Length: 117
Image (cartoon, rainbow, N blue to C red; front, side, top):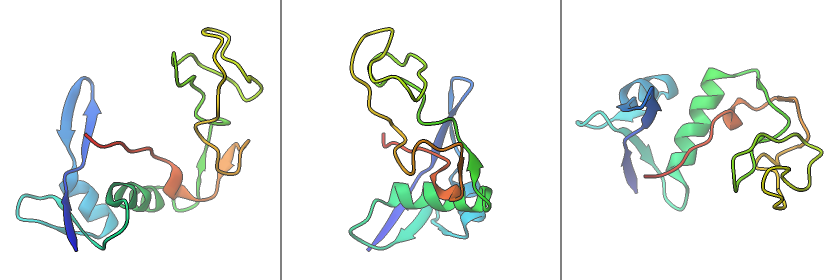
């Protein structure tokens, strides 16, 4: 199974397509429409692209901020010690749970987060 994926970013309030650049960086094929072509089935191809991009851009790992650092309810900035958000008083769970707490992640593939439109 083959998927054609358009990679978009938000930059200064504008949505931009960076599919061509991403395909070149990760060594993926491009479709006629310059989408990133990913082969395979039964997997999250968005994660695959973002993970491979992180591995190429940060081959030696990356510096982290303890964990996600934001309350998922109100986006208040948090530190590792809080079980409840001081702003909205809701229980918080780490958004970044891989090997936490951590100030440096040796796997660059986890440097970025992705979402679908």
